[in-house]
Length: 154
Image (cartoon, rainbow, N blue to C red; front, top):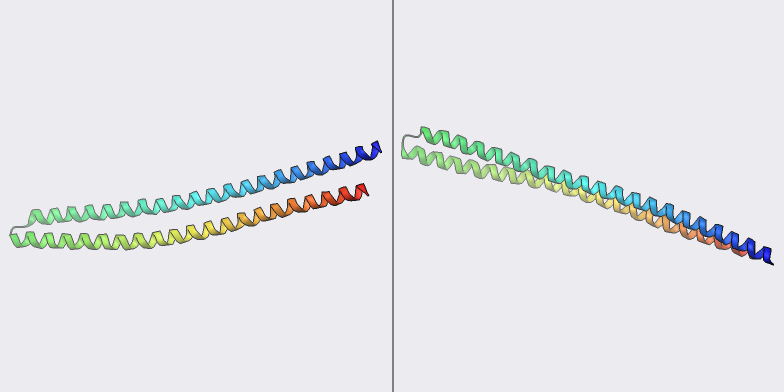
């Protein structure tokens, strides 16, 4: 009887160790997957920030160029009509520059946001599948250990 108790205890400990090891391994895989998703999201945010930075620099460069061109034309103006014409051209060009820049920025941000949403959605679905698989594996291992224990006791 003492031998049976010792054998049963040893099997139970082995089952508990196997369960703990599998739980740890599944937890590590899940953590690794979460970190992969986090890195991917950070890369996407960085891409969006890059888009914003590039677009802002381009718009600023274009606006300054327009202002410098306006200044040169204004310096050459001799008549009040030329002054008014230069000013009208400058404001029209600035408005067009801002409109074009805003449209391009909106298009680029829409593309970046869609890509971000797709990547995030895919990564989260993959992480969810891994987590479900981990729970299923742990459940299977527990069930197997329980069956072995029952057979050993019989």
